[in-house]
Amino acid sequence: MTKTKIAIGIPVFQSFQPTVAFDYMRMFYSFGRRYPDYDFFLIPKIKLEQFRARNSIVESALKLGAKYLLFLDDDHVISWRDTYESSQYDFLQKLIDHKKDIVGALYFHRSGEYKPVLMKEFKDGKYTFFNDGDVKGGLQEVDVQGGGCMLIDMKIFDKILPPYFEPEQQTAGENFGTDIQLCRKAKAAGFKVWCDTSIAIGHIRSESEVVTPYNRNQFLALESIRSEQTEDWAIDAWLKEYNADVREYTGLSDEKIIENAFVYDDDADKKFGDYTDKREYYKNLGIEQLCRQAFYHSRQKVALEGLTLLNQFRRGRKYYGIDFGCGSGVIGYELLRRGYSVDFIDIDGAPSYEFLKWRVGKSEFKDRAGWKIGGPYEFALFLDVIEHLQDWKPQLDNIIGRIVEKGVLFTNYFANRDFKNVEHINMNHSAVMDFLISRHMVPKSEGIWIKDDNFMGPMNVETENKKK
Image 1: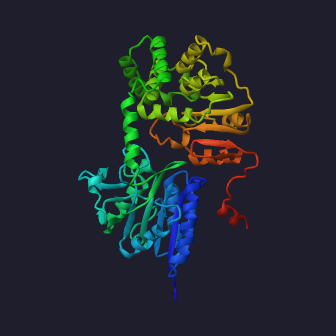
Image 2: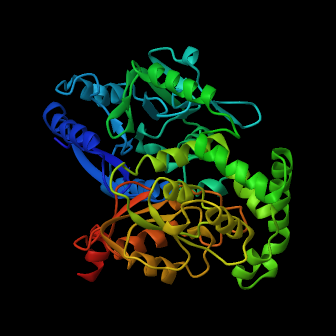
Image 3: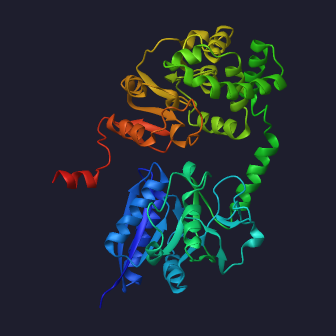
């Protein structure tokens, strides 16, 4: 008897969390024992851009002749109720038995309002996430099923033509995620989308926390407390001091700083293309550049991200690092204040950099600040900078060469999806990731890379096959 083929596609950012890896290994073992009528094919694809990984997975499933494609993400836990309970792995058979074109399971966002990752469409083509009251606890039709757990009948790809997924910023002029894209195309082709909301899976919140239906309200309450304690211009003592120094340096009120921040955005659109050498562009900016950075870093979401990054630095021995492309040096200066030694590197004459020099100069920390590339460094900050660099490769290579073994590079580059910003001239995430890996940098996460001279990078199977 010919067995039904099921492809399991997982877009992966370099590596699983240990919790996920343990859960998925048990799941695959369970599938092998509990599903004798099916042949399973695992298709993991390294992701930087979701659409490329998902397109590759669909193409592989089509070549295999799979009847079903089960999309899973690399940050979910299926058996979250009890570490040693395997009955939750029966979810796949339940989804198959529904005999739907697209059907998935329920899970929740791992931050923010912890809403169900299900969406409904308005008449104007916009989408909104479900509220708790929209969840029925059984099989229900939806407009968008979250791609983190989605079973697809491969027949839909007879009518949906490639590319099945597109860059998010280019999709119909809107910033639609890959799950929205596929569900839109399927519905336009006459198919329906469903979710069995009686099946709930966990969503990794951090290395030690999993968001589940039972604990998400605890996390939501914590976020509410943070929100109440966090104002746009008063996130924490370090940010208050930063904003006070910006006011002193510029002589402007908070209101005027915000006003100038928006002037900066307008000027960038008008002037950036006039400069072949972009360093000259930054040198000729006015005080609006500093105002723009002050406004940006004081936004609640960005400020909390800054605090999260600072929490990566443990108390104890004070390390020596570099803040490359530092601008006004919000994070780097705080590390300086906490006892670390930091080299600050940017373009002389740029307003934000001149402000940082002034700020360090009037502090008692100036003896630990450097203004030339030195090293060897135990950490390097590349925050809001790689996307701005014309010659990013030699500059990144220079700093990596100065990072010690097991030293850490911090960057928010791969989370940047602002393709419309005229200053973002380097948004080739794949090229930068490949370069980091070629220089023996190992990703602990999207934003944290560890130098390991024994690391050779993941094997590219397709390239190796071509060589043969």
